Image: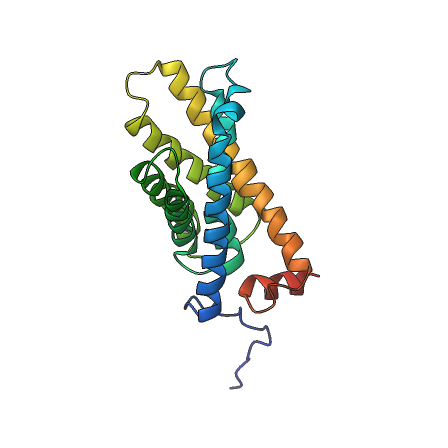
Length: 206
């Protein structure tokens, strides 16, 4: 009796182990993001004032503080990249002198990074696309607003809280998610990510 062997190639096995280059790239993204967070923090009040015509709508700008996690995750593609990047970015922002203080900056970085990370963990770090990156940004927005509700918005009207949650999630999905996916694709086209898994994937689609 003859046996039939399949000629279909097996799916490539993704190496989830961290390398030196992965740590370096994540750290660079985190530090650069932390500097940007600090800069955005300097103009956060006048920026938020543009949306004050609807209470809670200023959360549409919060995605500017959520992007480190999704960007690092989609570029490095290792477990913990989103959490690592967002937390380090928060530490850098606090070190530079955030007006929210150390706890008000580092703890949100931890929680937002965790929210972003859980999305990729839920699919076992096997799906890397626009939808997943947008969902990761949205999750960061959900986690960020949940922490703000506990820390800053106790006693606020229900309408304000609901609008803030919706706007934070939308901002996270668009700014920290979709725009970071587009940024990743732009960087990948330059060949700068050739040493990373994301660069290999982008090259295979070219």
